[in-house]
Length: 307
Length: 104
Length: 223
Image 1 (cartoon, each protein chain N blue to C red):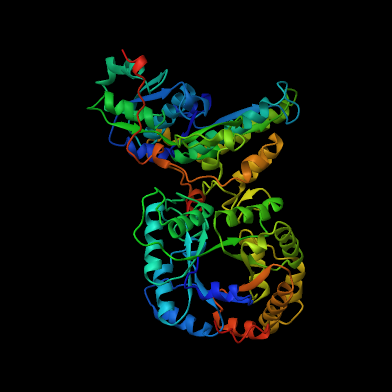
Image 2 (cartoon, each protein chain N blue to C red; image 1 turned 120 degrees about the vertical axis):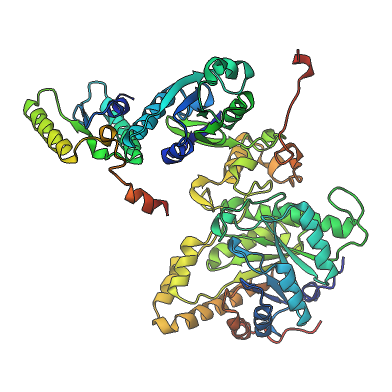
């Protein structure tokens, strides 16, 4: 099924894809998105807008995607199942497609306990894998979850997240298989600091032939400082930051740490590019979007191909 | 229940004597008693009664001297605290400041 | 059993502040087992409330009673004879009991002395843990006897999520990851291949809460 997605086209042409993300503001100012978008112009094939990441209220992903689209980007709508039931989900899927948004990333979402409104009631009517199934059913069968026919199927390129570093280790590739079976077409992984463990996961994925069913984009994040490294190591769920990485940053003077973090990020991209089955990178420069261009350039990913 | 009743009846202080830890005739009775004393101290504090009015001591039956010492200590303590607010009826004598901070 | 815990005593005192004569009603079932509302708790709470009143120079008369259950009309009727003499009923049964008191004694306020929390069981003396959320469509035979609705913080049916680490849930390191438990159990039972690789279909939540109170009727047992 061909959608209008630029990301889909780049992957189909066998090119190494580049995606990044923008975190929307905690207010109603659209210019924040425009400024972040401007930093990514010409650098990425598609850009995610996160959906109340870590359960913190931000401008909606759907609205922010439209702003990016108006700037000429191919946005990726991130949708979590934490906050909306299947009625709202199917409604938003139709809305996104109607607005010309071509990509959707299906997630369960960080639990509300992490966020700024821990007293909220969560939803989790369906989980991330069932969300993938839902988009696929609407797109390929032209039906809602209750089997009623919808009038015009939404054309969306379906993505999901994968975390090679979460436990239990032995089912992580199997879980990816489930996502592929449900209809996922591209995957963005959690950011990689432990290359050995990532390599092991990729080998398992390739053994199962999953790399041919889904396009895997390896996630990378530049570390700004030792403090950031420690925070991610200890306080962010599902993250594996080996001690050597922190030590490497500690080994340089404070003003040079961010430079070293970017260097490590570029090296990571170069290494994962060599691994079989990795078809692109997803650069997550949290609140540091201005560095994405530098990283992409340093890793030899620019200019982006014409499709 | 016995502890709570004693304060309800207007006792100014109550102390519980148990065997030395590790030497309980009933094996762990003294340890369980300690926890229950702690529980009642919590209730007293919530009611605005100084939990120091309730104490637990550990000693063996042969320690007559220690018993006398404890008796004196407890008497002094309770005397210093004055009559229980249960008898004076003048309101709380104790505010759980620590608890309030923790609650923030 | 239904597991509840005592409300902070200050909250209870505030609730009964305007009353001088109350009934304190306990229950011999679930709340007795979790040491929140049984006969012992009735005695202790009554003594504590009276003590608090004396401290403030006021009186409080409490009629202490512990019923077999507060969720059956026959037992709740047990206080009919003297209820009218009191200004309020402070119930330390679960939320069901408090409501039964309210329904049976319409002119007397029924007050909750406990916060009712969950359906669960004892892990060891003094520790009670949630196990069931009453979703109405039990699938424990498919998940090795471990409930994904209750034990997974996100109630995932195709878990675990990416936040599972060392068998613990991302929400709280003290909470075990429900899906880790399910996977381990399925392996022990030799059911892992059969159960885990399948995509779990979307749940029908209509048998769960949110539809007003659920009522079941057994025609064969009605009088």
